[in-house]
Image 1 (cartoon, rainbow, N blue to C red):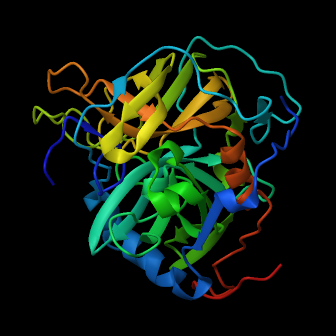
Image 2: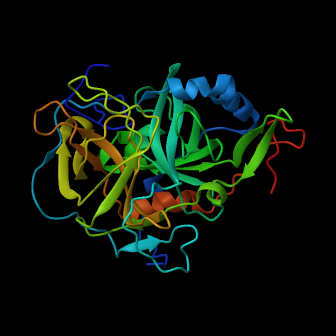
Length: 366
């Protein structure tokens, strides 16, 4: 893949890489596109693919991202036009709790890597568990789920590994069940809507003594889940987390993708990049490279509780000053239509994949 100056960090292979109350904005259901990722019948093959030989395929996955022809530019000052009142959904465990303070930056348990396959190539993005009714939802970039490089709607063998490090899955592996994104991203590849929300089956672990798989329960019960914020004023400080893996444009491999990294700062608006249909993304000074695509931008992050509100996911990234070192990442602006996509999967149940005998198969009942 030819190197570009700026790349969506985790995903597209078309033209670029780089209040505790629910407020329902007035948006049409036609803004949502949905797709099935995996059924219980083929989940066993997916788990086997990623976990055999000590997770060799997990370690072999390459950073995925959308390449574009020019460097995204911060073209003016100001802010995006919100399409309704600001709103937030509290994180799992924070529904009735006040935020505390911490001087340290403790990494969130919710963040991990999303792994998938396109044309027999193994890829990885970043992602995070997010609040939902059944504690079973993941937030990531649209290009880390929807395949805009071929005629297929979605990528294959999609799994999420929260807390991933050095090939390990401390809180299990979660197979994607259904994916939701904005209609304009799915149909028109509009990166101003580069986000996706994925419902996942219960986590799967392995009991070596019994030589059997184990049902670990819902994602949120193990890793927690961040809150969600939309129609927020741009410029509030955020923490961006992810798993960068690609080299800088000068060929220097600073990151390996095996450990979580973070950046902190105040986003700017708008970011424009015509080669990938970007007219109104937000940007953040950050040196993370490809592989961090889909990683959450967390507003009001509480380091003690490791929770806050996801208010963006990394979409593009790269070099803006010409020194061949990545220095900026970008995200779609989360507005009321983003909330509608999020809510489309919010109340959907997933279920277990592990049968009583410790094998994986069709066990979906409610």
